Image (cartoon, rainbow over the protein chains, first blue to last red):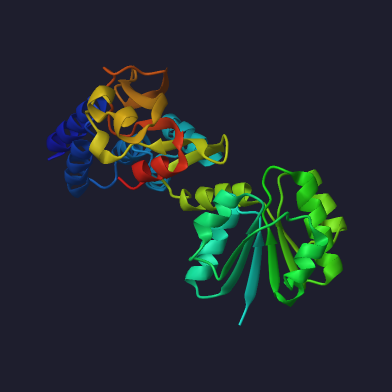
Amino acid sequence: MNGKFEDLLELSEFYILSQKFEEAVKVLKKAEKINKKDSRLYYNFGIVYEALNEKDKAINFFRAALSLDPDFKAAQEHLKRLIEE
Amino acid sequence: MNQFAVIGLGRFGSSIARALSEKNFEVLAIDRDEERVKELEGIVSQAIVMDVTDEKGLKELGIVDFDTAIVSIGENIEDSILVTLILKELGVKQVVVKAHNELHSKILQKVGADRIVFPEREMGERLAESLASPKIFDFIELSSEYGIIEMVAPKKFNDKTLSQLKLREKFSISVIAIKRKVPYTKPDGSPDFKEEIIIGPGGADELTPGDILVLLGRYKDLEKIEKL
């Protein structure tokens, strides 16, 4: 089961890199059904929405990532940047 | 019923005169330019060619009986001040004057104008308001007609090149820059992006989802893009 989660997470990263953000959201939603407790999942969601300029959604997802892993540095940086903007 | 006198029939004055007539108000329109007066004949109740600074003439017209006089003299600040003064001295209750700048507005206040408007500025503000959508990040007013906006590219634009979009031909809009978040993988394997700004993009540049466009154009054209 966890293997599938990792695959989906990786797939979402592939979609993010190729700027196919809608596809990335789809696989992230699938991944979320398998595991809701992984901070990387919410970080990737945050990245997608930040790239799409949907600031409020992005902020919520980076916060969700940090609630699961308060030391998640990249999430901290993105959240800080979005709030200060 | 309210009666209005519109003095000075430039673009602002004549559009106000028309708008008031459409609302069935009695409108007296005055300008020293015959052409401008002719254009309003048959639209307003009365259109008259006369020297607007002619105190006696204004008095004879019975301008005092009008509830509101709108002074929209474009080119000549001195005339605008003089007419305002005459109208107030004659006893017109409400005098609304179009101002060009702060100094003009201050003098108008001193000579008794009841209301001072900055149509160009107000138009800009209204526009800014109409553009106040989450898609618009920034807005710079260049003139009463032209401005620069920074907005999220409409979804329709995704994966199209600028030459395919033909923004210049269709909307007379220039794309000054594209702000793009370029994704990359960090050493730990997680995704991230850096912001890239393409200044003066060319026809071959293709838009990607999430791109922010910096556009220059007429407000009315920019609003069209925003509604796409």
